[in-house]
Length: 492
Image (cartoon, rainbow, N blue to C red; front, top):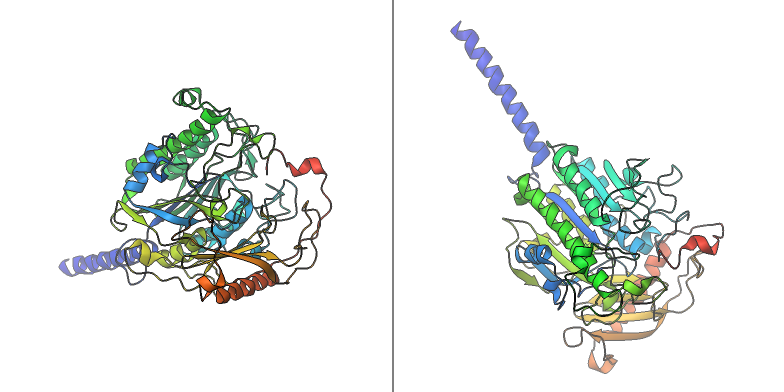
């Protein structure tokens, strides 16, 4: 009997060790005893660099984001991948300059342009290595949304999704156009950011596989037009006298309220300590009255030059906040430049996933920077947008020097109306200008070659990168779209 008990005990111990090993393989990175972190990325739409109290706005109240920044890192030089929505999202998810993947501009409903299924996203890579994945909110990475004709969120690694093609419609209040896992769900009560937050919290509470770490991508529609805001929050801005100003301020505060609800859920579910939270915006703020419906667009670039659609700093420099308790030291302000392109290689490293090696990645692993260690970027940050306001086609930041250049000829991958795509234009750049951001963050004073010996090399590198990216980008063949389907006044 005693021998039988020993054998049974040995078997039980052996089984326990096998289960323990399996558990460790799911939750830990090889060579690291700490569990693999969860990742929560919160992306706003058209939130300006200066729109948060913790980034210097004198009126807008954002207590939850102020606390998030105080609990972690506030990056002063955080960049989006593009000055416009669809390309910015494509860059964030793939770690690649958006023109490389063929997402050149915002994508109208019904358009052929989309994020190709051959691209490897953060969600796909993390899902393959054992993560539970979720997308909630604005998708805007295809024209044929919720159609088998183009890849949907589920085709890019998201196990669960509740999303819209572009804006919350007919406005932020009581939107009717959300789709959950392929099924339209009809009118939702409340404002879009709360609708998105409720779904995010429900998935965290009941939807995810709790035996796995998770990646959740929360994409608010706020503060993109056509916005709507709760009356109680509008009333808290009696000093906002300009038309639409109080509506905009309240819209940002409402979004902040939704962030607070998600952060509270992380606390309640005891997920806070092992969750890396990254908050940012897809591009700079919309220009007031740029089109008729933009009368509520009172976003601030925070003293930077340009706004949405510009390749100057105001179009691409955005808020960037990281919180990761126990790893990221709280109360930090870091000036080292980072970009949303950096998320994919950074998350892959932390999750023990292999970043794609068969294609060019433009982002870099900034894990050392998050941990307070020295970090040196190996290649300059680069942007390209063929319809940038001001005419500038490409920009590059190397250290504290920014160089911009105009395309020698009009980019012919797409017409001005995005109706026709033809062969890539690999011509070089001309009409360069440069600025030293450490002394001229508003980009008022152009550098002369005599003022910077390496400026000629920076211009050469910008031109080389531009030609390379143009050569990589695919060509889309399209049928002309009726102008009213472009949604120029309401969706752009």
